[in-house]
Every structure is written in C-alpha cells, then in structure tokens.
Image (cartoon, rainbow, N blue to C red; front, side, top):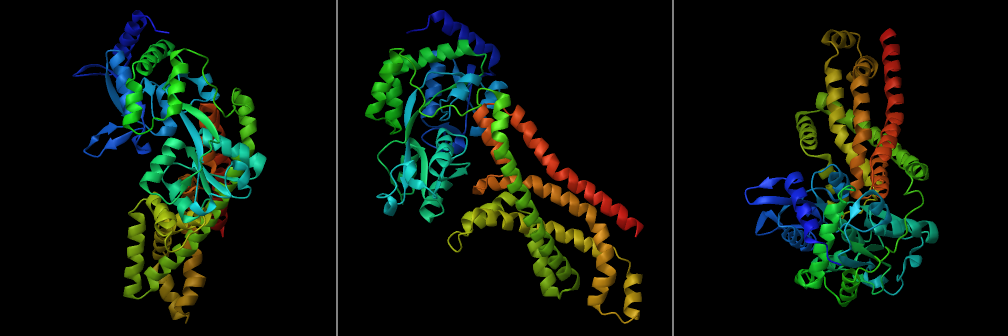
Length: 494
C-alpha cells in the first residue's frame, strides 16, 4: 500500500523543521553505532570520517525518498532508544531488533530484514551441541539486551544453561575459541561475519529463532514512520533494497518471501521471542527484576570488598617500599604507581582478561578483582605514603632514642597515627571503587550497573531502573561513610 505524496511532503517538512540543516540542504539525522561494525555500520577504512554498511545505505534510500540528505549521528547501540526519544536524531538504524517492548514504547518501521538466531560452537563440539537444551551447565554467550539474550535467560530457567552477556560481538567469539564459553547465540549476519574474519568455529545449520531488523523512531513520530514505511516498501518493490543486501553479502532466498509479505502489507510477522512477564507494566517489571538487581548488587559489593582488600594490602607494601626500601625498590614501585595511575582502568581490565589469556585464562570475576585491586593499590599507596610522611620527625627521633627499631617504630608509632590520617581518603576511594566496579561488565561480569542496563533495555526506559540502581548504590555506600565518620570521631578522642 503506497502512502500519498502529501504524507511524504509533510514528513519532509517535519524533518526540515526538526532535523538539523546543512550546506547541502535539509537533512535526515539518523543514529547508529559504528562500533558494531560491518555489515551494519562501520567506519570506512579509506576515510574514517565516513561510515558504510547496509544500514548506512538504507538510511540513504529513506532520505532520498523523503527528498533529504542523510546525516549520521554516532550513538552507543544500547542508547539508541533513549537518544531517539530525546530528539538527538529522527531514526535509529543499526541492527535494531523488533520486539513487543519496543513497539509499546516507540514508533517502529516495518521490518526490513529477517535474521536467524544461530549457535556457533567449536568444531569438536558440533556433534553434541545442536539446540539450547543441549547446554545444561554450559556457558553460552551473546550480546546483552538483545533477543538472543532473552532466549538465553529463558533457557537458563528451562534448561539450566549459563548465559554470559557481552557488550560487543567480537569478544564472545574470541572467548569461544579460547574455551571460556561453550557457544555463542547470535544473529546469523554477525556469526557469518565473524567466521569469515577469525574462523575457529562452526555455525550450526538450524535456527533457534527468527527475528527482524527495524527502524526506531520516537513514539510521537508516527507520521514520519508511515512515510518511511512507504519508502521501505518501495525499495523492496523496485529491488533497490535487495541490491543493498546483495552488495553486503547478507541476501538469501528467505528474504524474497519476507519482502513479498511486507510489500503485500500482510500482517507483520511476530517476533519469535515472547515479551517477558512485566514488560508492559513498569511497576510489575520492577518487582520481577528486583531479585536480579539484588543479586547483581551482592556481586558488586563482594567484588568491591575483595578488590579493596587487595588494594589496601598491595598499597601498604608499595608505600612501605617507597619509604623504607633501597633506591632500586623505590624506583620500581614509583614506576608501577605512575604507570597504573596514568592508564585507564578499562584498558588494564582488557589486558588482564584478554591480553594475558595466552599465558593464563583467569575467570572473569578473578580478573575483575585483580584489575580493580591493582589499579586502586597505586592510589592507596600514595595515601599511605603521604600519611607516613606526615608524622613529625621529632616523634621518630624520640622513638629511636628510646632504642626502638625501625620496624617497631613503624608498628607502634608511625602506622597507628598514619591510619587515622588515611581513613577519610580510604573511604572516598572505596566509594569510588564501588562505582568503578561497573566497568567490569566489559569482561562479562554482570554487576549492578550492567544488570540495570539490561533491565532498562528490556522495558524501554531508564527511569525506574535508574532509580532502583541509584538506590541500591546508596544503600551500599552510605553505611560505609557513616562508619568511617564514626571511626574518625572515636580516634580523634583517643
């Protein structure tokens, strides 16, 4: 069914007013994530300032149909929904999956591509892993906040497999080859791209489920959505969309029948994965996700406590070495402190978990403890060194006059007073570490912030999940601050 020319004209006028202009004329701002890579959206190797991919070309087809120029806006894939609703761009196109929750919260276009959720396994496991029911007790990886992740959560409750969530589609396959996970469940487009790029695994022939890519618009932009739907149907009818998919090697015979259904304006194919209980109701959703958030909060707390304990122990060693050690030791410890403080903790986590995997394959949680602990040890050592240096030299000389050894002076005179001085900044560091623990999701540890992001993606809003997450962080951090203040008062009176 074609949309009248007047509707397209109104949509073009909307874009002229609501979208940014350029020297070339009115533009259609569209959002995508170039980190996702080809064939969706990627930086053009010949000109990194430009992007290419089939979603890039689809945006061009839509803009051309509306008489506009496409203008790309980089956005994290997980933030596309929030960004389109706040008006950062008119439409999100970056492998956005159709889902009941998204249709309830936003204006979605008709599906323009049908993908299959497939299992990738190591060649030696191809004979025993064919479906999700075969993975009881085994780790299966995918991207967080996707249809595949929801399938894994359902299979966890039904079949007892262990879902592993990633923020990108590169490391799941690296961990599959390295033996950290037993399979990857993901869109066949991504699986085939990764097999061509790295190899080392096979894709099982059967599809676990099917889904569809759509364009995502703000809930109020139904007029523009209808015009885009007309443009997509025309692109399916005249073969231009097929040519795009063939150019990017993602066309197969099943797409022809799918296109026919869309052109005929038949009922939209249902997404294979059902909407989880509570998605349509924000309050009910909060209650259903609360156990998962509490479990993630416990992981965050345990991770922070263990990392801080390591940071304190290593920090004391570094501080003592820099104060009492010989010149070579002082220089080595000073180099460690400067290198750690001068490089991002995110980079250090990647090096420990992925970079060292050829030497030692650390469990993700242990790698997270080591990464955060060794990072914060550098900062703790400076606190302790400054506190030790703050003790007056007259006290130290008096202790030496009484015949105390340097070890006794440290244990009986210097350390107790330094501990009082170091308490407040130590508390601040622990609260900072508690929040920095959110970074460990990049190495597959599902802590509080990551679980909140998954929750927000599923319900299509950050309001309730964000409030719950903030409340839990405050519950974790405020008692520690009160305890520190109580200790400061008690020690000041001692």
